[in-house]
Each structure stands twice: as structure tokens, then as C-alpha cells.
Amino acid sequence: MELKRLEHELTVCKVNSANDIDMDKDFYFVGKTDEEISLVCKTEDTPENTVERDDGWRGFRIQGVLDFSLIGILSKISGILADNNIGIFAVSTYNTDYILVKEENFEKALDVLSNEGYTVI
Image 1 (cartoon, rainbow, N blue to C red):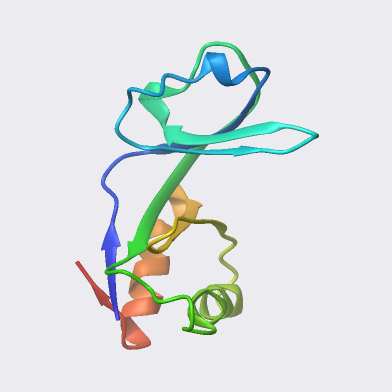
Image 2 (cartoon, helix red, strand yellow):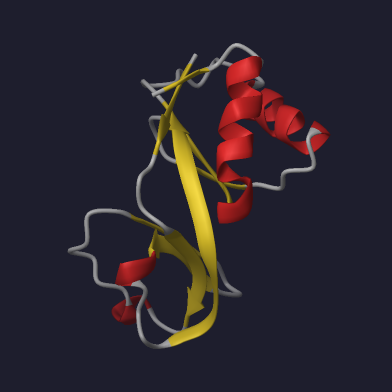
């Protein structure tokens, strides 16, 4: 399975309103519930009006389109990283999964996964 590293630094934050998010940017994830609006974006694109923010994330995605019938892909990756004391923040799209780790663990995470048979591109 191929993992594609994302080259940009990421921020995880909360905003008061979806109006605070620049929807014209090329990379972001938005989660809205009855309790909050969460945003993952390039650090350089973080809105000024955040309620809370956590900088210093990096990420990679599972390459290709994952069929919904596939089971355990994210679980296996998160288990390998957990066994190596690396926490994650995972986000899924219709096509695939994105795994974020803190900057200081990024290269270690990719090395560990590479050693477990994943191809990192």
C-alpha cells in the first residue's frame, strides 16, 4: 500500500463560524457538529479568528481510492503508530484516509510504516 507524504505544515483548529473559513483554499477539512466547527488546513491558511488552534502537524494520505468494503486499513496503520508511541489525528474523505502526526514524529512515523511494508512516496 502506498502512502503519499504531504509537504505542507498543517494546523488543527476550531472556528466560531464557517464564514471564517476561506473555501477557495486548495486543502482543508471541515467538520461541523452541534458542538463545534473544526478545521484542518495548511498552517499558512489558518483563519485569524480561531477559537483554539494546534499547529505543528504533518500528514500523509493512503494513495488511491479505497472501496468502502475494505476493512481495517486505518486501524492497522494507527495500531503500528500507537505501538511506536506516535499519536495520530485521522481524517477521512469519500476516497481515502489522511493521517496527521505531530511534526516531531513525522519522519519516524514514515520510517516505521516503511519498515512494516508500506511504500512512502
